[in-house]
Image 1 (tube, one colour):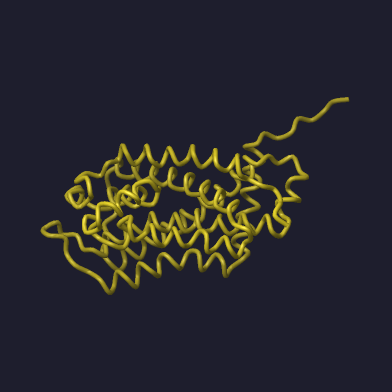
Image 2 (cartoon, rainbow, N blue to C red):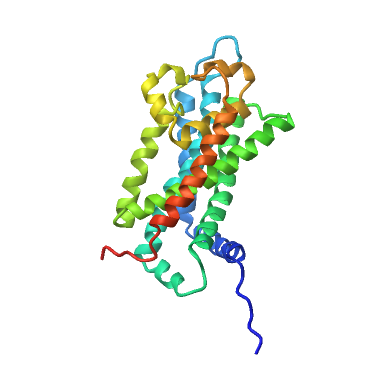
Length: 270
C-alpha cells in the first residue's frame, strides 16, 4: 500500500497563514483598530507638534512619520501576536491544532504571514498620512527601497517571534495585553519614536533601548524616508545600517529559540 507523504512544515505554514488572514479580516473591529491606532497617533501628534530641523528642510512631523512605520510594525506583530497567541491557547485552538500534523514551526510561519500582510497595509496607511498631511517625500533611489525591504522583513520576523514568546509568559489573553503594551509604549518613548531628535534623550535610556528591535527598526526607516543630512541627529551621527541588520537579525534567531523552548500548546497552568 502506497503511503502519502505529509506536506512540508513550510507548506503547512502557508496554509495556516491563509486561515489566519481570513480569521483576522473577518473580525472587522480588530482589523480597523489595529490599522487605525498608529496612523491616528501620527495624525494627532504630528499636527500638534511641528518644528524644523535646522537647515535640512525637514519637519519634526516628517521624522515622526518615518519612525511610526517601525512602531506600526511592532504594533501589528509584537502586540497583536502576544494577545492572539494567548487567546488561541486559552480558547483551545492550539489544543485542537496539536491533534493535526502541524508542527510548532508551521504555526509560527502562519502567524508571521498574517503579520506580514497586516504590516504592509499598516505601512501604506501610515505613509499615506505622512505624504498627505506632512509632505513626506517617498524615496526614488532603488537602494533606499532595498534598505526598506530588509528592515521591514527583519522587523516583522523578529517582533513576531518575540510576540509569540511573550504570549507564553502571560497567564491569560487578558493579561497578555498588559504584558505586551507596557514595554511597547515605554520603548517607543526611549527609542526616539516620539522624542525627536533622539539626542534629546539621556544616553542611558537610549542604551537600554538599543537592546530592543524598535529603536533599530525606527532608525532604519528614518534612513529610508529622510535625507542623509538627518543622520547627524542620530546618537552615533550616522544611520548605522550595519548594526541595524545585526541587531534585528540577532533578535530573529533569539526569538525563534525562545519560541521553540517556551511554546505551549495548552494552558498547563489550569
